[in-house]
Image (cartoon, rainbow over all chains, first blue to last red; front, side, top):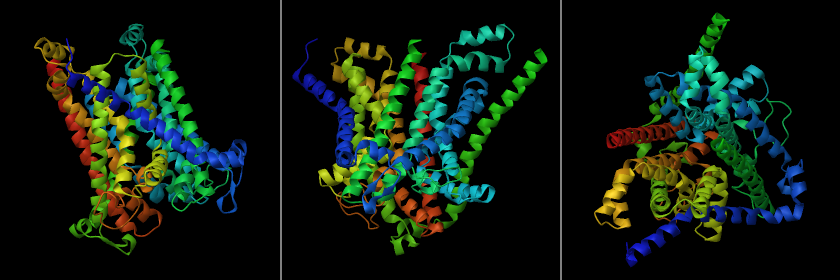
Length: 285
Length: 282
C-alpha cells in the first residue's frame, strides 16, 4: 500500500512524540547531575557520602546520616509492608471468594491514590503520639516512619505479587490438590516458590517507593541529622534532606541538595535495574 | 498428620483473611478519620473565600483554583504525548531496539521519586528556562511525572483491541491513520480515559514535585506565569507549621473527597470497559 505524504508525516510526528519519555529521562539525569556535580567535585564523592556531619551554614556537607536514615526507614517499611502485602496478594489470588476480591482489590488500589501528605498527617496525629506514649522517646522516629511507609508500599507489593501468583500455571495447583494437599500446603510448597521472582520484584519496587517517599516521612521522622541508634530515634532521609532545605538553600548548600538528589537517583536506578532483571529472569524461566 | 495439616490450613486461612481485613481497616480508618474531622469544618465560605492570616482564617479558593488549573494543564500536556507514544508503540512499529529504548524510558520515569521531579522542575523549568515559580513550571513538571502512567494504560488498552478490527479496516481500504482514529482509538477510549483519570488523581495529591516548581503563593493566580499553592501544599504547610489544625482537616477532607470521586469514576470506567471487551470477545 502506497503511503501518502500525510501518512508519512503522521508517522514521523508519532515517532518524535514517542521519544518524549526518553527525552525527559535524559533531561532529568543531565540536570540533576549538573546541579549537584560541583559540590561532589569539590568535597569528593567519598567524603560526601561518608561524611558524618551536615552543617550547611559552615560549608560541611556529609550525608552518611541521611543514607543510613533512608536505609533504616526502608528496611522498617519492608518489615511492615512485605508480609502484609504478600499475604493480601495470596488472599486475593487464592483465597478470596470473587465477591470479596472484587471489593478488596479496588480498595487496595485506592490506598495508592491517597496523597502522601495525608499519610504523613495521619502519622503525625496518630502514630507519633502512640509511639511516644507506648515506647517512649520523642515519637518522631524510625518506627513511625517505617509503619507509615510500610502501609504506603502495600499497593505496589500487592499488585505485583498478585500478578506473579496469578501467572503460576493452573496445573501446579491441580497437581497438588489431586495429591490430597491442603490449600496452605499448595500455597506454601508450590505457589509461593513458583512466584518467587515476581514477589521479589515487588519487594524491590516497594523498596524504591519507600526510599523515594518524601512528604509523609518528613512529617513523622523527626528529621535529626544523626545516625539513629534505635528504632525510637528521630531520623532524616535523603528525600527529607532535599525537601526540608530546598526552600531557602543557595550556593554550595543548594548544590549539596542536588548532590543528595544524585545519590538518591543512583540508588533508585540500581533498584529498578535489579527489579527489571528479576522480572525478565522470571519470565524466561 | 492429616488432621495437623488441616489445622495448619485453617490457621493460615485465618491469617490471610486477617491481613486483608487489616488493610481494609487501615484504609477505612484513614478516610473516616479525615472525613469525620474535616467535613464539619467545611462550608461554602471555606470553599469560596481567600485565606487570611497565612491560612489561619478564611478559605482555600486560590488553592482550589490553583490545583485545578495545574492539574488540567498537566493532563493537557501529558495526554497527547502519552497517547501518541502508545499509538506509535502499538500501531506503527514492531518490537525492536527502538521500542525497547522507549519502554525503558517510560519504565524508568515511572520509578523516579517525585522529589527528584521537583528538583528537576526547579533547575530546568524555574531556573534554566526562566519560567519562575509558576503554574507553567508546575504543570510541566507534573506532566513529566504522569507521562509513564498515561503511556502504560493507553498501551494496554490499545493492545486489547482485537486485531480483526484493524484487519477489517484495512480490507475496507482505510489508511493506517484512518484505522487508528476510526477503528482502534474509539474502542480503546474507555481504557485510555481511565489512565488519564488515574493520572489526574496522582497530580491532585502531589506535593513534593509542585512545591518547588509552582511555589506556595497564597494569592489567586491571574496568568499561567503566576505562582500557585496547591491544596496538598497548603495542607502540608498548615499541618507542619501548626497554623490551624481545623483548617488542615478541612483541606484534607476536600482532597480525600476529590480522590474518592476520581477513583470511583476510574473504577466505573474500567468496569464498563472490561464488560465491553468481554462482549467483543464473544
